[in-house]
Image 1 (tube, rainbow, N blue to C red):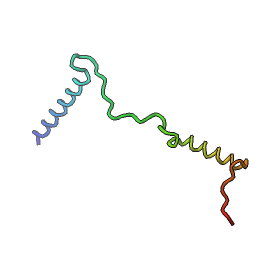
Image 2 (cartoon, rainbow, N blue to C red):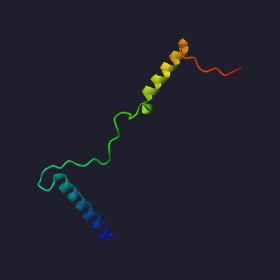
Image 3 (cartoon, rainbow, N blue to C red):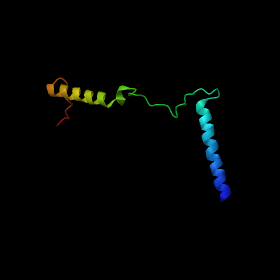
Image 4 (cartoon, rainbow, N blue to C red):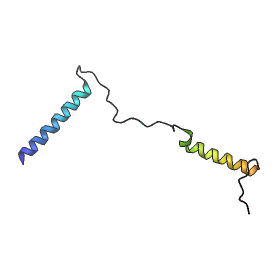
Length: 77
């Protein structure tokens, strides 16, 4: 049991030391860390992914229908 605790303590100290050395770089200079994962795009890529665009498009279509410029298709009675 004591041996396991010593091994865990040694592993933790070794990990922290290696991490510290990586942050400092080999010459003692700060090295920027690599990003852990790619960042998502800040805005939608295509118009059909943009909820605001689709909402405005639907609003314009309804406005045109109300004004009679583009009446909806009526089924035959």
